[in-house]
Length: 317
Image (cartoon, rainbow, N blue to C red; front, side):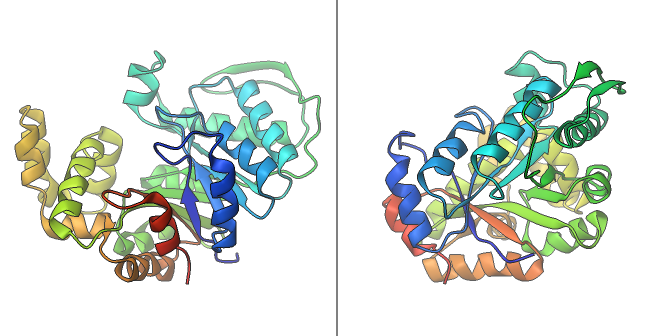
């Protein structure tokens, strides 16, 4: 696949209406993609719908939409609508998400995440192919669903995947995988599970500042917030970081948030969070690309600098 270079939307502190000008600027600067997320801000599809209408040069993706928080039929309709709005430019990202998002914030039991994601993926593929589905899956039953608007240009579906089972599922039944919260040196281990011929995308966190102490302070808070969630903790155990992260997990479980941040080593921060000058950040991003990430998507944290300056400074060479 052709190498692409993306950025995460929507930008914090910028209304969706104000993104129209930024979409044009991003495309002018050579970014190929804009990718949304679905956690606790906007939903995953609305920012992409605006981008589809306002800037035809951009590819669009969502990383990721939880398999739990929409019914399978509604999710298929949302994907089909995006494919119709931006034919050939939309990539669907599907994942299990995590217990806090699914269960604590949406009141849905976070049970059997592998099976649920697999079943939703299988249903979506069949629905987008135009099939009338009357079937019992392991985690739900569908009776007589068929999309009434045929999908002329079926979008690729990537799975948010962090451990062998889901990575292998991405290789077998999806078009590739979306990675998150990893170092460039981890890419090969993940790609080996997905297998050849599949697209690998990744969200990369970037703090473009030469103030290393400040960047690491921000980064440590991000790391302790995410890598204490079981999904990400298990991922990093699989990657071989149990020993280096155990002090953080212990302090977090004891309720000592300050200590949890303090015990995260600089070396780990510098692997997981891209920071430094614009040139240093682009060099670090290139290491992910060289390792096999075909769609790097920057999540820019413009602490102490202007957002638009950061977008310009991190633009592809």
